[in-house]
Image: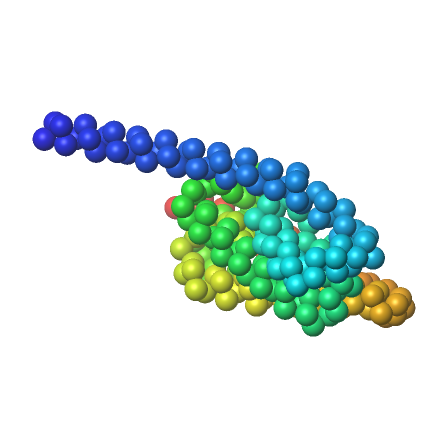
Length: 243
């Protein structure tokens, strides 16, 4: 019995050491990707003409590379998604860019969810400040969790990468999360890729109008997000004080 107990303790220590090692490897790998791929990617995305030339030079692999960029953008949360979506609309056209972005972000969201389910809170903390993570703690206990998550993905301007990482800490079903994280992003993607496509067609007035609408909805979305966070945070504080 003693030998079995020692073996179990050793096994637990080995599992913990393996998890920590895998976690550190993931963080280092993410940092490597950000420096080697993320920085050049953002640089190209900020110059749509250069991005189109870069993508065209890769042929069919340009589409695969673009999907990979979207996956990376979700995984390495510090990479902004907006410029990539605009550049995608410029390079591929509105409809194709929207599909490619949706596929990439769906795959990226799935990977994030599974990684957080495995590594837990420490992985989320590696990418986001503690105070930002704590803002979403109400999602763990609220009865309307899935509806709120749907709203947070649907509304432009919300920190969707943070929400995706935090969802792995909740009890939401994987299938439900993937459906939300993939398809609820489409309205936001639609606006950005439409603006980029208009720029590619040299319809600059249309591009300005579209981007102005996108910025307006983003601003409103930020306000709605702040309202949801404050309102549900107060509810949680009140329920805690009653207990």
